[in-house]
View (cartoon, rainbow, N blue to C red):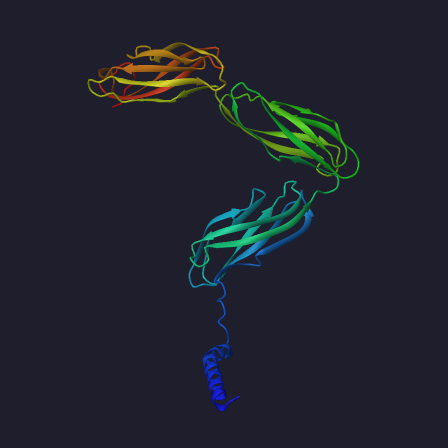
Length: 351
């Protein structure tokens, strides 16, 4: 190698070493370390391990705030309805911690479970804090589980019988004998009186609500001869709705001077069965209004009304009475709230 070529390569080597010197200096001083979080969940992983699917488990997490400002927990969310979380006070003062109590009820679910509790905060750097829940649920020997654990009938039309099926699962050795099954105000049928190990039985549940409108709650009670979960209690929920629906349900009448108040309402049968509107009348009987009925279909009618403007003054209340034939109910009363420029002595008018 010539002296000239060697001198060129030596110059390049020295230039490279000079370029690496600042990097070596930074490495010698140590790499930058990410700052520790100022708001966090201490021991954020709850490892339950292998556990029974019909037990309740509880744990306490510490929500730590080491910042110089208070932190507010705005909302708490859980993976599913089987987990519940409670924080006594949403505001965590600086340099303090709060207990987050978490309970888990598997409700008969089996297999691996990966859940969490998420806390929304007002801290821009840590807007969401998470506590994780891990478990592997097993059904205990000799247990009977019901699926679903809650029976929801949803909306039930007045006069209808609603049906649902509850599946019972037997886990363990030996056959299972059912002793009894009952529900208040309903009828229960069990397809089989005996269920062999690791098999299922269907409980056909039908309910005829005794109320016309509004929510109802009940309990399905199933008694077995088992030592584990020998008596199952399943909540029952539903909402009764009237068969005949009127839209709008209340008439708000505001006539102007010289202009009659007119409008219409639609009367329908949710069951899609034929019925008829046999009569329409205002109450009190001397209410000075007129109506007409138009049949839109076998299960729907339109009622139009007209109220003279000069006959209503101040504030008045009354009703539009409907007489029905062939429907679950024979009559309906539609409230009327009127406010107009005239004066109607037939009502108790308040000015």
